[in-house]
Length: 304
Ligand code: ATP
Ligand code: ZN
Ligand code: MG
Figure 1 (tube, rainbow, N blue to C red):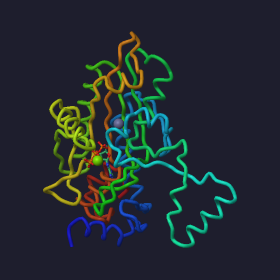
Figure 2 (figure 1 turned 120 degrees about the horizontal axis):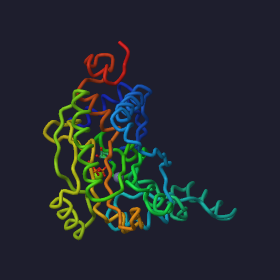
Figure 3 (figure 1 turned 90 degrees about the vertical axis):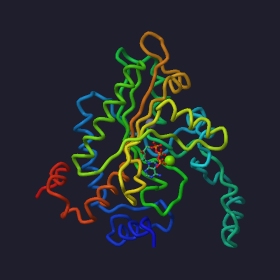
Figure 4 (figure 1 turned 180 degrees about the vertical axis):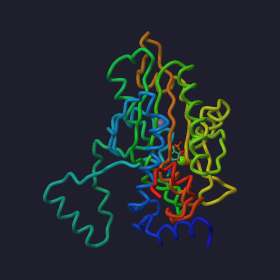
């Protein structure tokens, strides 16, 4: 049995994660959720004074916005669309007959106006663009959403529905790259406070196909994406628990995000993988939260 299976099995055994029969789709216990809530309070303690505008979107986004984002060009393999039955009585009858005989009843489902959110920041850009030019000093936003990615795996740190907490900054190149550096420093400090071993590395997104490999190389060469890696299922292959992304003016140009003076905005986002951070804590300190080191418990606000 490999390491991944054993951590997942232990998470199931303790009830921290709840098996649904689908890889990467889990229920969470109250204790697991509580760890995430407490870690989010720690994020608030670091970012709360920055004056970010908080917004919460549901885990589905406007399909038209999803189409404009270009996600299907870069990550068609990860996307999830919401389809529904849109027929009448006769269609319903044949649907039920099809299910009865174990046929593919899903082929007549029709696409709705909703696509599952692939990253917490996706619904933000069109929302801000609609407001008109950014205020003087740019924009700063605080987001959290369940996100969907079709990447089934028996690695508990690679889920299909998971939460991302994000801060997104819009402004000049100088402004947003400083924002990103600030959060890289904060990320390292926060993880040290909760007793996690971290490394920071340059990274790239898994752009699809042959053209995608060129995009990935370019992203790496230009240091557009960094990841904070923490051991979860393996010390040799630590898991990305935060990412720090500089989009240059690509999203600004795509969505029509403009500074107060009319210049195209640069954007950056930092994302916390909330389940991954909780899993890193369990992997490092054990599955019994009451037995976690006193200093870690204190930082997370557990009463002793
Ligand atoms: P990976 O390289 O591990 O696939 P990623 O580069 O795709 O990660 P991002 O797109 O930068 O990840 O997403 C932001 C954060 O969301 C990641 O740093 C990670 O903590 C978390 N995350 C991404 N994919 C998953 C997943 N499948 N399950 C749980 N958390 C995830
Ligand atoms: Zn983002
Ligand atoms: Mg990925």
